Each structure stands twice: as C-alpha cells, then as structure tokens.
Image (cartoon, rainbow, N blue to C red; front, side, top):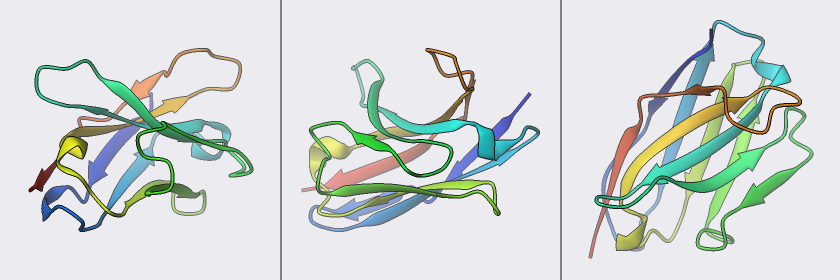
Length: 119
C-alpha cells in the first residue's frame, strides 16, 4: 500500500498562485509515475498533470498548460503542483495519484485538497 497526503490547498483570488504538495509513504515512491487530478462540483474528475518517475517526462491538460508545473523530489517522497494565474474554473478538489510501472491506471489516490479561486 501507498499512502498519499495532499496539502497546500486554500482560497485564492483569480490571478493568484498556490503550490500543492503530496507526500507519499509505504512504497518505493521513486518507481511510480505521479499524477494530479481535480474534480469540480458536479463534474467528473479530470486529469491535470503527470510526471515520470525520473522527472524526464511531464504531461499537462490543455486547460492548465503554461500555468501549472508538476515536479517531484524523490528524496522527500513528494510531488508538487505549482499553480500560477489561477482562474475560477480551476476550483475543485485536487487529488494526487500514483501509477506503478506497466499499469494503465493509477493504483493509489490521496484524499484530496480543496482549491477555491474567487473571481
């Protein structure tokens, strides 16, 4: 089992920034691809960003490209999501997730952290 705990969410005005963190424990963090997802009220959970285990590959949803940056520190078992130029439509619960090598789906999920962007 891997435990994932997100932090760093909060209330911010449009145009502001936040940095989310996700601390992992229980498994070899460095061997997992890590991702961030979000779920807005009344909507399905959607992909935001992912980063490979060696940080040599990242992918972003079109809606956040150029505004969000995903990174990881394998020594600290932590993945980050730096968010700039936040918009009201970025509001939602943000989840981090871990995907083992060779798996198509994410194996472990955190409980989420709320991000609210006011206009």
